[in-house]
Length: 210
Length: 333
View 1 (cartoon, rainbow over the protein chains, first blue to last red):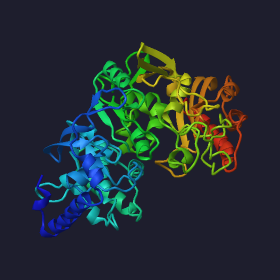
View 2 (cartoon, chains in turn yellow, blue):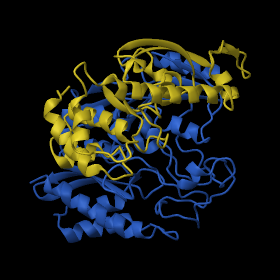
View 3 (tube, one colour):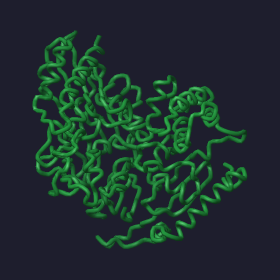
View 4 (cartoon, rainbow over the protein chains, first blue to last red):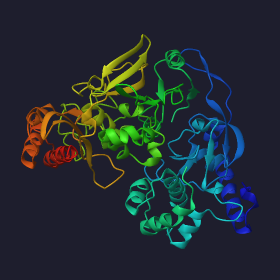
């Protein structure tokens, strides 16, 4: 995967702004939380004196790149991707698994990253919207979303596209009715559903079933 | 959310040892779609999580013997799409594929789903003193009784709680007489699914009969020809991805065009997955038509009691069950 920093100047500027914002918030108002999120050594449990780690050493692959870091055990995969790894494509909509904006692939299957504890990604492969474009350009599903205007504000779009790719690979995109049923975990508040179904129908024949 | 420790274990024995060592504030976590969500809401407050999603062999699905077997950590999506389940036990497959979204079905386990906690809005949204709830804080009272109770139960409620048992899969398993395999401190044991759930009575915070340290290692379902003559009908506020207002699991053992034995359970309307014995009794020996189906379905709701805003569930429930009975019967032809 190309480094996000190596993309077009426009993209770079936007990401720099976002990342700078993250650093400011971490060093400012979020300091206590940030301190907790740092790699914590074993701490004694007050209950029984047993030594338990409050952080978890996580080793996994993100968009094909091996990644290892200590995470506060409470961290969601979504927060890890966004706040620690700078992969802000997956969005936080509801943070309760109800909207689908955070959809990523875990070992090739779509999951809600907001309800996936980061530690559960240990030893596994995570693919985000940042990891699907090929050397020759956009993924067919990305192109289909553009071709069909399958978005308005775009906030749900990374989750829609990740869900849509999985929907096709699962074999759940053979009719518009089936697409609607198997895409029901992704809410679009702008109501771009007609375009989304059309985009999936267009891209489906170009994506291999798994 | 409080700081917590997290360990991944590979065997049930390791899990139980870790649980006992960690003490009162330990919880098992599998898919996490319910527990982690409730942790974010400040309702579940574990200090130690023991991850049992990757226990060796716990995602096994075996349809070869005289029972279907689903390992406790088998994913909802995998069981829903297993060819034998899909073709020969539609009530099971449909109860899973109509639950949650594909994202969540790829995470949630069929064992964990049995222990899903209620979606009662006062239970979920009332932490930190906003609303009393006898499930969250025993003895604090119930804001749902006499409150905004459109979603609440019409069957099985007590003076302390009318929260609905939220699952679909447990309702289908109830109709199919499933058995739950458990592993605890004293070794393995098996219970009928009907014995897993406690009615709310005066202690609605005690929802399950199993020990806190016990693990659901598997679910088994007797193989029966009634599997093919079965259906799961779920009525929701929207067509997909919502909890049931009413759901009906029906499996029929047929003798020609007569019902030899009906297996009927209801979801969305009761405080536990609800076996509808009165409906089963009225269907026995009958040939199916719309009138008989509706009569049996109404019998299932004879004991129903409505609150302020949920009386519609009684009529909707009877009609939904009647439709499910007719749908299931039509598969025998």
